[in-house]
Length: 269
Image (cartoon, rainbow, N blue to C red; front, side):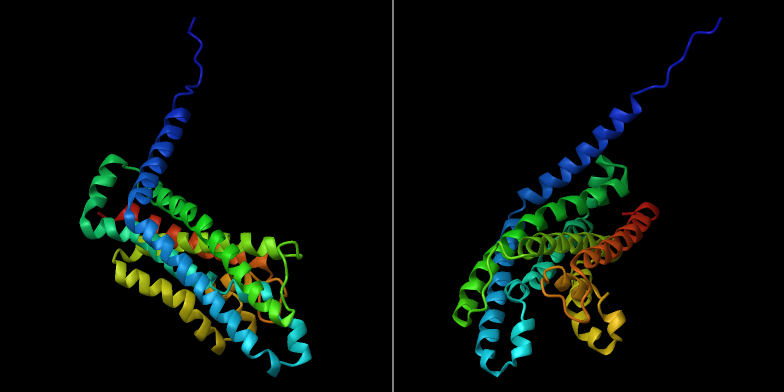
């Protein structure tokens, strides 16, 4: 009579432990680097500063705008225009989480300690997004409050309770988090900080310029324009709905991270 056998339950806890350790290791790296917090402070300053500059620019042109333009004006989106700056700066930080280790050779030690290379890459993406979300959310809140004080002089300000405002703040933070994942993917593909950061900047900022030469139906799917659409309350022609914009960015993030995972798994560090 053969002894009854039962499926082992040890594989599942072991897998969970590996994931937990990998994420914890990457989180420790990113939070203990002084450059992470300097980048966060820089993001806040540049993002809010850009939003304030846009707000003052809109106010200075208010008297030249038509009644239709006044009605279509989106004070929420205008005050959070700095989300584009946050996307580039925090996306570059995400790039460096990968490229810095390749440049220094530390990636060999990382892969020696954590042989599951694709899991390491996923952990870098998760921790980069985890940093990007609260930093961008803070930028959006501060930028919104300062922008509305500026718009109040033209009686164009809105409050946090205005429909769509809180969603725009949250969606903007999610959008930048997805750009951070894209940054990790590009970093894993290029492996050189300057080149990868330049490509990311061209995708986000340069895409706004290139998009002007594309048909309207295509332009709205550019990553930079989709990022701006995420903080839009008064949707206009040529912009996706905020939820759709996040889906588009998520697809870009999945493609970039998937391509990087294939290269990491198949090539030497």
